[in-house]
Amino acid sequence: MAITALPPDTDADIARVTEALAMITPRWNVRILLALSGPPLRYSELAAKVSWLQSGQLHPKLKALCDAGLVERTEHTSRHVTYGHTNRGVALLPVLPMIVTWAEEHLEKADRPLPAIDQIEDSLTLLTRRHAAAILWVLKSRQEVSGRALARIVMPSSDWSNIYPPLRQLVADGLVDTKGTSRPYRLSAAGDGLSPVLGTLSAWSAGQPLDQASQHPVWGNPQAKPAQRPWGSSQSRPAPAALPPARTPQSSPAWHNRDLFSHATTARPKAAIPAGGPRR
Image 1 (tube, rainbow, N blue to C red):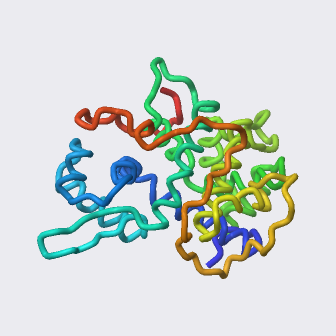
Image 2 (tube, rainbow, N blue to C red; image 1 turned 90 degrees about the horizontal axis):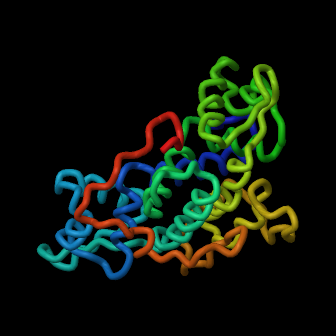
């Protein structure tokens, strides 16, 4: 079922990116994925790494990540069970330092330096606003769009005025700009800067190597050569056989999992940012 009035391939692309974000955005999911970096862990070993989570909280999170195909549960014997990344889970990890690179440039600066993991969680909160992926896609491809026209594209089955609450939120978050009431909307520098992140998420969610992000028809590099194959919506989404290199717009820091997960695991992390945006 179409979710926008855009062409079917584009509609499917937006749906896949939205689904990918929904897998990793729920609270603690990224921290659990980072804690599982390395050899598979027993439940007790993983619980020790995320000790702020009670057992009743960790188990459903693990199950959801297994259901999403990011974590694999391996039963060696009835008393020896381990958890580790699937190939798709491993292939997703290079997106995280790209989010950190974007956050350091575009998110409002905090009073004190924040661990990279906090910057990732703050950024994901913005990207999973209602209709955010579709609105950002349309504004990137069409540069300037009125609210009424944007509503016809993004939510064709709803009253056109319903576009304004998510638009106002994206403006407050600093991802979208407008010059005032009844004026068209466009991406801000921060919204445009999300191109590598959204292009890479699109490639990952379509089961393509991450370097295919540079060929994305909207989020890719306009100077790149045409893709060798069409950006189809009907293809299956197999797990990449190996971890491909991540694409970054500029030379980015060589982040490691230990850097992203640099907070003390014995301390309870801060709560997610409030709904008003990245105002720390």
